[in-house]
Structures are given as C-alpha cells and as structure tokens.
Image 1 (cartoon, rainbow, N blue to C red):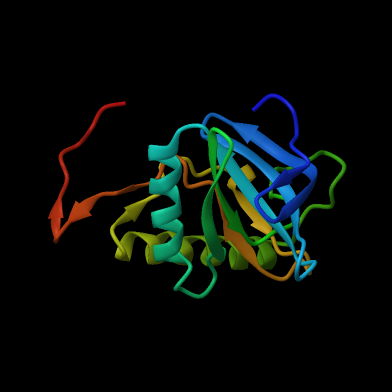
Image 2 (cartoon, one colour):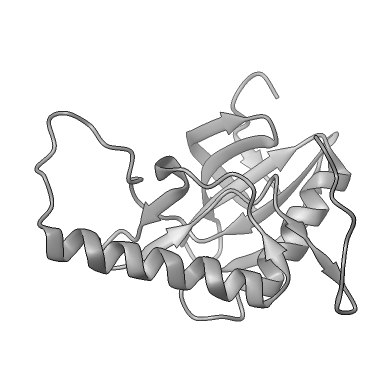
Length: 163
C-alpha cells in the first residue's frame, strides 16, 4: 500500500504509525463509537492471519495488546488492535531512568516474554522499539508479532527452522 487510505472498513484513517516488512499500521477511528485504534494492513494474507491468531491467543492474558477484528479491504487484509503511545527506543534528549525504574521495566518485560513462552509462542524480533507505552504511560506492551511463531504443537517442539 503506497498511499494512506481514507477508510478501511468502518474506520476513518487519519494517520500512519509505521511500515515494516510485515505490513503497515494506521490510526483509525471507528465511525460508530468514535474510538481510536491501530489498524495493521498487509497484502500477505497468510502472515497477517498468523499474527492475528497469535494476538488473539495473547490478548486473553493481562498485559497484552487487545485485538478486535480481522477483515478485508480491497486487495489487502487488516486487523484492528488497541492504539498505544510511544516506544522505548532511546533518544539522546530523553531523561535517564533510575536504576529502580530500569529494574521494574526489565522485570515486567521478562514477565511478558515468559507468559508468551508458556503459551508456546516465540516473538523472534525483540528490541526496544517493539515495546510501547499506553497513552497514560503506565503500562508496557510488546508489539509487532509479524515474525512470531508457535514453537510447539501439542506439546512437541517444532524443528528448528533457519531463516
């Protein structure tokens, strides 16, 4: 998708949040509820459906992003999820955090990774820019599951796949 659409399904689009190898994410507003969401769009239906399935599994747990619907838009598929705030990517102009804050953040992040692994999911792309804050800046969410995979099926570890 080269240009920003004006609408995707029942959502009015009014901004772009980012673009990567697994799709593009827009800010959209539900025309009925006026609630804002993040909407991920991709022409790669197989990978987008896989990511949606992983998010539907994780959103049942506390501390993981909510995902609400999957749909088709022209030649693209999309899914709708919670809209978050900025990421943890460090910028020189930002204030340094205290050791206590860094430890608390690290423990929260490790807890999320452990919870994912307990559901047989591996993220495969963990980096500071994949951790976003809520708009009230009180919670941290791990995002972008485009490379994530279920690593076990019925309790049996899958073969290692070199990519």
